[in-house]
Length: 143
Length: 68
Image (cartoon, rainbow over all chains, first blue to last red; front, top):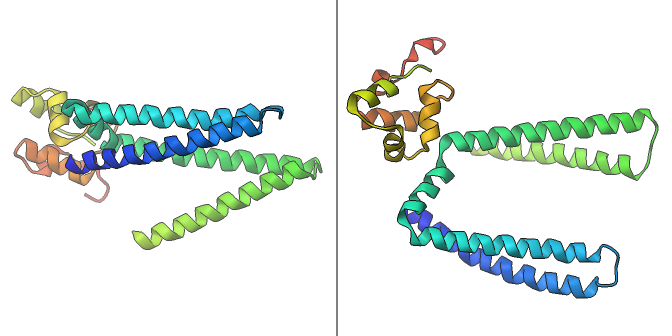
């Protein structure tokens, strides 16, 4: 539990850094893209990251003050069933995304719609497969 | 995998919440193990068995496991 407490304290420091950096980026983005169409969307994205880190700081501080909540949070964060659910969900999502992109690439090739969309999808597909192979090789060495 | 967790809990008058807190998992995980929807890992099985003062084999039924 003490280790988890220290992890939360570290997270707070990182979240504060993220908050300051993204707040700065949001201000810069709002000023520099004020005249560009959809430009405020970039600033909005940075601002959303700011709000997320602020919310995480608030949550972490509340957890550190309340021992009961901290224990509950620790259990939820380390529960093996929830961890397995997360892993399965990630695995399934990755599989579905790979299949959908592959189908899209095949459809584009069959319809001879050669263009930036096909090349982008193809690049994403190749990148995902390469990353998958590298990660697999790394974990094979580790386990 | 069949287990005697529900039976042992009733015998010792322990709630799922109490057992879950003692072994460091959520109450839902204990429920899932009891209704055979989830198979506990070896460390968790050991913790549960030790909580009841029994061995893993006395709590978990390995007869369904292939090759046993």
